[in-house]
Image (cartoon, rainbow, N blue to C red; front, side, top):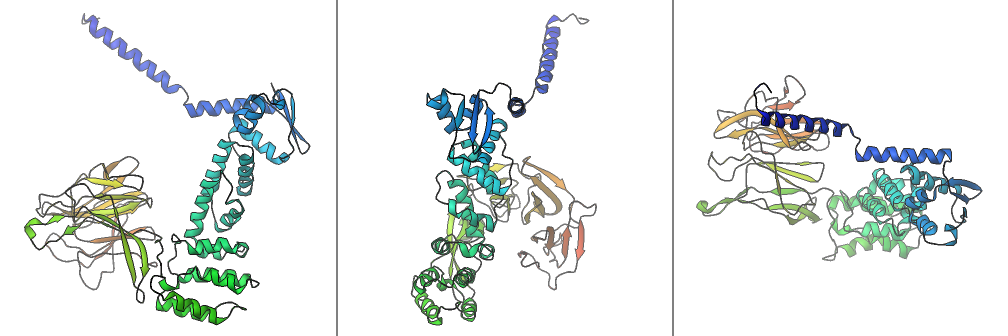
Length: 498
C-alpha cells in the first residue's frame, strides 16, 4: 500500500495465503496415521460390542463380530458372508474346522491388522491364514517368520514345505538351510529330517560350504543318529557329498572320521574311488562372491591401451590340486565407457557395489570423481553423487553403513583428505583428515575398526606405517607397530581375527 503497487500487494497476499494453507496441510495426519486411527476406532467398536451383526462359534467360543470387517479381513469369510450363501442370511455361523484359538487370532487381525504372537504363534497364524484365505494376514506372518529364521525353526518348517501359498517363506527357509549347513547339522532336531530332504540339500549345487568336508560331517551326523538306515539308503545319501571337490587334507579327515557303525569302511572307500572319475567333482556356488572391477588392460601396443570396463564375479569353485580351487567366472554389466583403473570399490549391505574415483587414462589430468552403484536388481550401473575431490590410488572401505575414500592422489598432488558417503542421503561429506598424505596404500576392516598400511608419501617414499583410523575421534589416526618392509600398491585383508 505504501508503495502504491497493487500488483505487488496481490502477489504478496497470494503467497502469504498459500503458505498458510501449506502449514495447515502439514498438520494433517499422513495416510498411515489415518489408517491406524481408523483401525483403532473399529477395534474399539468390536471390543465394546457396538454394532455387531454376526456371531461366530468355534470350539465352544462365541465371538460377536461385524460382518463387513470380517469379510475385509479374509477372502474365505468374504465369500461366505457376501455371496448369497446360507451363512450370509443368518446372524450365527458355526465353524467346525477351526479351533477357538485360531478364530480369535483371525478376528483380532481383521480388526487391528496386527498379529500378536511369538514365533510358534506366528507359524500357527500362518497356517490358519492359509486355510481361511486371509492373504494380508498370511503375507504379514511370512514376512515376520522370514526375518527370524534359525536352524531349529527352518527344520520345523519342513512339514509345510509343499503347502501352496507358503512358497515365499519356504524359499527363504530353504536358502537359510543351504547357507548354514554346519549349524543345522548341530541342531537337536536335525536327525528327524527325512533322508530324502537331506539328500536334496547335500546334492544342491547352491549348497554353501567353506569345505566339502562340512557336507560329509552333516551326512555322517545324520547316519550316526539313524543307525537303522539301510546301507543302500546310506550310500545314496553319501553319494550327494562331492568327494571329488575335497583337498588331500580333507580326504585325510574323512578317512580318520570314517562311517558310523554298522556301516562298513569299504563303502567309504568305494565312494571316494568313484568320485575320482572325471566330471564327478561338480561345482558348488560360493558363500560370498569375489568381484573384479575394471583395471588396467595391457596390450603389446601401448598406444592402444585402454582401461577395462569389464566386471567379473567368481560364480563357482571347482576342485583343484591340494588346497587350490579353480574359479569359474561369470560376467556382470560392464562399467560405463571408457572404463577406469586405480579406482576404489566396496560393498555395502552385502549386495550393493560402489565404484568411485580412479582414472580413465594415464595423464594426471584424467582423474575421476564420479561414483557408480550397482545391485543385482539393476541392469546397468547407476551414477550417484560424485566425490568432492577427484582422486586415484586410494582405498574405498565400508564402515558402519558409510563409505570412506581415504587419501590418494589427484593432479600430481598426494592427498590426506578423507570423504565419507551416506547412501541414504546420496551425499559425500568431509571426514577427519589422515595424519599425513599418502597414496597407493591399503585398508581393511577388522572387528569393526579401520586399518591402513603402507603406501607412498608426497616425496614418493614407500611407507611401512600401520594406522588405525577412527573418524569419531578428534585425532582419528593412531600409529601402530609398523610393517617390517615398506610397501605400496599392495592389498590387505582381514582373516581369522588378524
